Structure formats: structure tokens, C-alpha cells
Image (tube, rainbow, N blue to C red):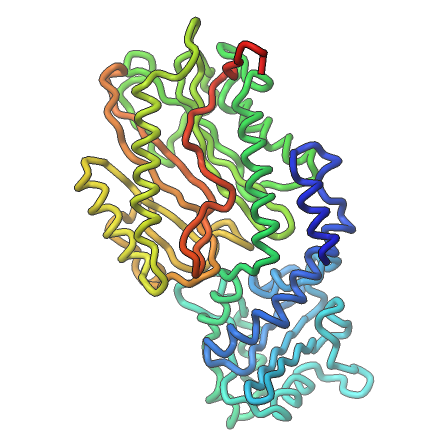
Length: 445
């Protein structure tokens, strides 16, 4: 395992295709991480949720989103009807991992169903449950957390129809357990996460350079598709289509602040533009989400104007205020209100819309504002912060630029990690505007 993680560090130090792990190596990493999560993380999560049996049911191509994160590396989908049973015996400090399926669920979960001995899959499941007689049986259904609402109507009804009456009263929503599984990152995963964000930063840096952008010719849409192609060429994926937009003077653009749903396409990027992107990748079953800014130098300019550099500092200040209010047990709505109030008291005009990040881009866990819900988010915003969780620290601040005769938005997003040691960015954050073209020193660097 140590060798695999050394490979990750060596192979992802830059973004050349040969430095991304090959599929076989990726599979080794994924399965080792799953083994660690099943054996070391899951028992703790089940104890915290008060659930000693967790039953997950999926059919091929219609997977429970939680079960999908548990698939062995060589399984791209569930097979037929796949049923997983996790049984936690806290007294004996054991956890059983069983697959009521025709096959072993990879190397981590063994098959507990011999169809030749017992043709009925549901009966075999009931036998397994009855033999262990759990106190609480968790199923993945949830009114408010979509990723945790994975059991479909048919599977739920068939399961309840065969479950004896004395066991039906033990069935509860596994919402808390499912969120814990989705949101919690292990030490091994955080080694990987640093590399993912580094790759993401490198792609953005290349996209926002003279290698990709020729001012007066290249459009925002061109850059978006370049980013998609770059990711594909590396053997990776994006979990959403990148967006690239520009802000410029009122005379050139109109005194207009883009909303999130009406960014114009195919805008030609020209000198003097403040260029912004929203971009994320998927690799080794984790996701990144990043927004950065670049300035297109005008002739004879050696750096961005001071007023734009200062505007970025305002954005960084909002980040600092926001992340300084993180505290285990606080709800997302509490952190949101404290941060907005503090930012406004300092004369800033912030908006915060931070979401959990991990095995899904818009993941389950603590929601800290939404762009159209700055007064708080019902239910999901009331969920408390837990340690060992990653967030897309997504926010903006509105800044008046007299030289441009308009307001602009400094929109930023970086992966941040919350743990017992406090908050840190997974792989740094932007504190200096990128420039197009890059400014070189006297040695040409």
C-alpha cells in the first residue's frame, strides 16, 4: 500500500499523461482505500449512528448512490440485484461484510448466497438478518439528502413484504450513517486529495496562459472545451462542464453582474479582461471543484492593476472570515450567518454558497449557504460540521471598481479540509491573479 501511495505522489506531481496512474494501479488504490474504510471507518460510523445492521439494495444500472461508492474497482455497476449487509457487533468489536449476491463483491465483501442451496435471494437475506437479530436495521431513504435516498420503491416494498413483522419495527432511515460514509475522508484519501487539487490547479494555470489564450481571438467557450479535452487526454474526467467568463469595464461590457444562469458564451477574450473559471475533475473516485481568476495584460502592463489585486484580497478576506468560523458541531446555517454578518461589518459584500465535496461533487453533509439562499438553507444547512470532511469553499464578494465604472464579483472556490487540527486548504488557494501572458523575469522564467 505504501508503494501505491508513493506512486500517486510521484506520478501526479505534474499533469503529463504518463504521470497519471494507469488503470491497474488506480484499481489497486481504490480497493485498498475501500478495505481501509470498511474495516476501520465503517464500524465507528455505525456506532455513531446507532445502527448495527446496514442493508443496501441495488439493481444493475440503477445503483444506490452510496452503494456505488462501495463498488470494487473492477465493477462499473452493480450486477443483477446486489444486496450488501453490514453487521456491527460492538460488544465483540467485529464487523461482518456480506454480499447477498451470486458473486463476491470484489475482495472486500464475500458472497453469502448460494443460489443452488437457496434459490430465493430475499429469503436468504431474511435468514441472514434473523440469524443475527440486530437491534436496528438501516435502509437508505431520506427526505432531504438525495444521495442517501438510494433504495428504490420496488426494492423497498419487496424487502418489507418478506421481512417478518417482528423485524419490521427495527427498520429506520440510515440517513446519518449514509451521510457519514459519504462525507468522511480517511488519512489515505487525503494523501490522494492533495494530488487531485494540484492537478486541477495545474490545468487551470495552463488554460489561463498564452499556451491556450490568444487575446482577440480565443473565446471563453474555446477555453471551456480546451479544459474538457485536456482532462480527457490525461485519462481523467470532469464531473461538470467547465465554465469560463469575463468581466471588463462598463463601456466594454455594460454595467452588468453575471448571474449564475446567464453567462454569455463565445465571448472573445481581450486585453484588460478579468477572466474567471469554474472547473473540477474526477480521479480515484474523488472530485475537485475550483474557481480561479486571471487578468489579460494590456500592452506595456507588467502586472494586473492594483485595484484588481486589492479586489482579490477582499475575496481572500471573506475566505478567512468564513473558515475561521468553522467549529465542530456548528450547523452550516450558524457558520453562514456569523460569516456574512462579520464580512458586512467589515464593509465587504459577501455571498457564501459552500458545499460538501468528496465522492460526489455536490456531496452530502453540511451545506453552508446556497447562492440563492443567503438567509440559510432549511434542513441541509442545519446539519452540523463533522471532522475529517472536505468542502468546496465557494463564495464571492462584490467590489466597486471606479476605474471600470461598475461593480465586479470576485468569485473563488477551493477545496478545504476540516479536522480536529482545524481548517486547512487541501492544496493551497489563489492569493495572486494569474496573468495572460505570464510575466517573465529578466532570466526569462
